[in-house]
Structure formats: C-alpha cells, structure tokens
Image (cartoon, rainbow, N blue to C red; front, side, top):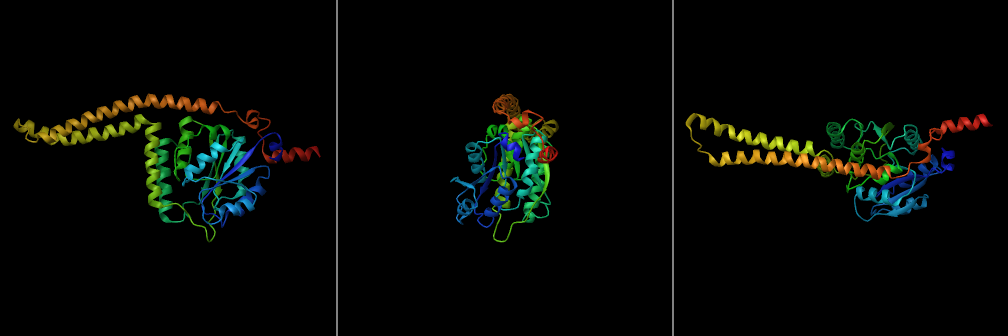
Length: 334
C-alpha cells in the first residue's frame, strides 16, 4: 500500500471527536502506525477535556468545528479535506486502526465508493440494552425502506472515495449522519461493500454521547425526511392510504344509517369523512408530482458524483492491487 501512496494515492483519516482525551492519542498513534502514508485529521467539536491538545501531541492535524453535533463535523470534514481516499472512524478507541488497511484494500479491489466496517458483536455490547434494541430496530427499518445493501447503518468506521465524499450533501446535524450516508449510496445506486470487523469496548473514563431516546427520535425523524426526499411516491402514498382508510371508516356508520333510515343525522361526521378522502387524493397527487422532482434531483446528484475525478488506482485494474500483492512483487524482484 505504501507503493500505492507513491503512485499519487492520497489517503486522509478523519476523526470527529468530542471529549475523547482518554483515547484520542492512542487512536491517532494507531492510525499513524497502520497507515504511515496517510494524513490524520482530528476535528474537535467543542471538547472541554483537552482532546485537541492530546491529538496534536500525538501528531494529528487538529481542526475545530464550533457547531455541536457529529453531522456538522462530518459536513465540515468532507468540505475541507482534499484526498483520493478517505477513512472515517471515531476517536473513542472502539474501532481498531489495524483494520484500516483492510478497509482501503476492499475499497480498491471491490471498486466501491463506500466500504462500511460492520461491527461484530455490537448488539451484545452496545453500552445499554436500549442502544442494542435501537440498532436492531433501525437496521430492520432501513432494509424495509431503502434496500438490503447494509446490515449496520450506524457504523462509524467507513472508507470512501473522493467521488462519494464530494457528492454527499450532508444535511444531518447529529448521530443520524450515518443513516444519511447509507441512504445517499442507495439514492445514487453507488457500488458499496461491507466488511465485518471486531467492535471494541470503551476504556474506563470514556463515555458514549448517544442518548437512547433523544437521538433515537432524531434518527426516526431522519428516516421520515429521507423517505420523503428519496421516495416521495411511497411516502405520500402511505399518507394517502391512511387518510383514505380513516375517511372510509368514519363514513361506514353514516352510510349504514342512511341506507336503513334514509337520513343523515351525523352530518359533521359525514363531512369529515369526505374531507379525509379528498385530502388522500391531494396527498397521492403530491406524491406523483414530487416523485418526478426527486428523479430530477437524483440525476443532478449523479452528475455531481460523476464530475469528480476517479482515483488513478481505481481507473486501472493493474493499480488496484492489495498490499500483499505489492509485498509479493517486491520479494520476487529481490
């Protein structure tokens, strides 16, 4: 892989951090050892425990994002950093730097735009039972709504191509950013891959910033927003079906009484049922129109993606080889 770097392959390791002074130095040193040719960037998100200083002393390029939230940090990182390949991880030490080379190797050999390091055993050690249940629920919901490309949409250990990074709009503000990343790949039908990796435990003194209920509600609202933006016909079709079903349910007793007596004594109920059915027609029409709009937006995003240059190592099959292949070639030459 070092020879790939000499061929002009620039790799950036991106580490968003908030109060990770207990672990960030060892994480930075681990990535410097695993990827000696890469540049390590630590984005400090208003830490109060000396995270920035610890990262700087460990040899990282430290920058700051004042707007609180992981989504803000990722948006800033993707906008600021120029590289051919990007590797994103957390600064809490739960992702092993030794797996970084395998992620990049998979990105190159699979010619993918994103490789997700799925967390082996995350449901057994997610910090709290609420986290584990939320992981299962939201992964199942994602597969129902957006496809089966991913089995762990909340993994923060990912490798990206420049094409992916520079075409990703990143509108999220918090931990729902990983969900948006997965939906972006689904939306543009990008080649993606998964790699199952071990998931470590936080060391003593390091604490999760994820709130089970608050962040769970934000992720759920992000699901709704992304479905509305990417699959508006399905979204508004469900709304229309709910309104129509409610209207019909309210109208049945009124119609039954009308057939029996010829009278409509509950006129307000009848008017409400008609209004709900009319609103269902409006929602269905909105879904049809917005579906065409969404297709146009997808085409624009696809053009933005294609406008980004592809790394030379991914253009030529001869260059997209593994580090082991380089070692074997050098051994034969010797």
